[in-house]
Length: 267
Image (cartoon, rainbow, N blue to C red; front, side):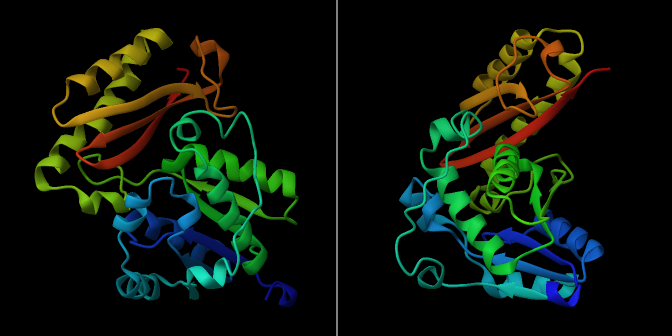
């Protein structure tokens, strides 16, 4: 299709689609002649096999949604089609992939790069769309594209989509009980409050503010909260060290692992 002069938008997903995914697809539809959405639960990016087994799979509903919002094709291969033999490629983008998620989920980003690079080679997109909720993943994919020199490929980052009450949309939210769903609200609420708090407090004080709030919240267990340079993903000690900083958080609500982030900008 690219040979015919058509632009191709790719939206890589693991299925269990929600309004956040839909926003990526709608943007891709608006900006490209053809839109391909991949729907594939990639086993190589799960360091916890229990998490892989519990990941929701809703292909029929996904296809209905994608048809409704204008996707051209759904690419839903089997594991055997994507990995006819083990993928032994090793991707290393230190220090981007050694901090935060990279520290707590060894091998995760290697698996992400394996599947995303395969999708790029198969689909040959003009643009690929990723949500900023997975902020670290987006930075690593940008670096992968730069290093592997994918011809003219543009990576498009799209803002986090939230429920009306502020909870970041995630396929994992479906695994939350009603009580856990209420408890999970403390994550985004704390981040929103921290953005105001940061205007008159240091990085260290803001870090402590968020950590203390999550520790005090019922039903939540903090894995990490880091305030980093939005470009390098390295921790900062003062706001002056970064034109834009981002606070990245991972919290367990019951057995469900949730991620979110918030941007801190100078005012």
